[in-house]
Image (cartoon, rainbow, N blue to C red):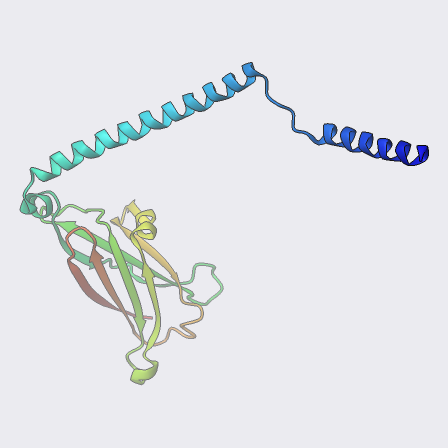
Length: 201
């Protein structure tokens, strides 16, 4: 009987000790206050940022609301022409004897004749019109505004978008004239410009 009581007491003591070691350490009152104060400061900073952004958006809405659609699209932004640069062609960039790159120079001009970095999407197709219709399209590429804005260049040849496209799998031999077709969709006005150019070997 005594042995059973001793074993039971030992078991209870072991459980009590184990429970004490696993219990989470409670924060002191000072630590709790410090933690809550820090959280409150962070929320205050976030609130100030949101209020600032809200104020800026309200100002933008008031400014835009006072403009007519003609002022917004025609007077402030007027893309008139899109052309392909004279140097649009196939090139041997790695000097291995094979022209593996199609470089497209896209020039955008406003009503005053100035180059303009318009935001839009570009679709490019390379055709071999000497082939049967089913095989004439050699390749196609699409560029979104996020891609296009990184391709704006000002050089001695002018100011333009310069798109370098890999045609190593599309063109085996550049021995016949090929046709480059380009569609530029202006995301501000919705205008669509379609153009093409024959490139010679």
